[in-house]
Image 1 (tube, rainbow over the protein chains, first blue to last red):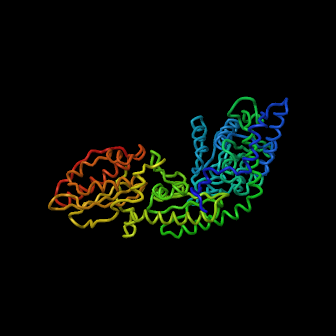
Image 2: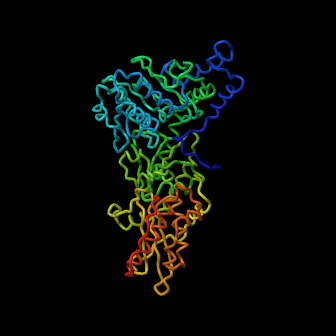
Image 3: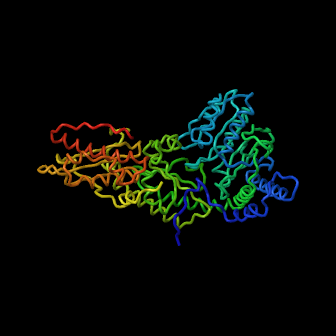
Length: 405
Length: 139
């Protein structure tokens, strides 16, 4: 039996796996201790639980448990990594390289640092959403201290060539930070094989709880340090003060363990459903896949349906299907997604996009229903779209003088 | 953001979707907005030459639910009005009728603009002077 609403927005957040919740519950009530309490069993128990979770988290990304700094989530991790490196390595230089489809937590942090004297290069991406490696290397200067490139993009799911990026960085003695939020738990990520020095990720994108994440900080070859952004009791090797969110961390650890064990089978199943959805929707006339078909996450598909507007499109089925659009008609700015625009998409196509994010609990029945609903709504809206009518009459929309407002 | 019931109703059952023969002198066409802005409205009126009454109105809209609803509502209001009465359609009446939130007010402005553009197109075709309108400037 198909139950509504269907959730297809797993890049925004994921539900907690019931096994995760089960692992967390004792740490709210009986085992409520502060992991920093050294003098009694409540504290020891909490510390033990945190240590175990730290191992689970580290294992998923091929790190040493000592290299995991628990945070409140990836936004904090992004801030701590970039600001922390900028401050810690100030004597080496002030130049940071990033790209223009990063998450706002990275872009706005860089903008903030620019006001404080940093020089930031924002690399453009190619039409497939990947950066140009030659451009990256050419951007490196003697003052470059950090390359901050996301592992996978949240809107289009493209996966950056991390190994090639880190090889270039190594060659020039520059640190590599990556926002791993969308990739960790979904595809194999190994900080050593991938040559990553710092990586932020979060539990709620991988079937764990909200409000807890981690920053991976390399300890060997090279030993990396970041200046703390929150001062206090000196928790997390002095890099992140604040009482640890023990239940959250326990849940995060469990979520990582499940992802580690089930990634292969989950991916095999999800990618089939994603491909079915995508192939069916790309059969709709004038529909286009955004991003790279090959280098991307297995559970994401971003498709533009030309001549219909994304928000209007979603309204046709959002009572029953939850997903995201690259259109931003709800925001006062009316600006469509900056990620899609960075790919060189015209505003019309960017306004016409939908992001489908599948997950662990997505079923084939849900996908079949989604294909039917989206196709029907696109057809219905095109019947009332003046642009579609013009297109069908062979009028080139670019020749029309629109009243821009 | 939740839509009002009236917006949802117009979206699900839009009134007067379609195309009138724009080559006819009795038909005025207004095309406003731009694909880059995420909404384009085309609104058409057909005027009875003898009475000056709008006997038919049609629209096609590329845009969000509020834009579709605003144009659908405008066509309903246009039918049966004289051209002079139609000029007075104000976007704020559309906002009130559809309970549009502030971020969607531009949809109603666009509908008002489309009505005025259609009327002016009709006037021009029939040798009348185009009316001058004040900019609403809410876009």
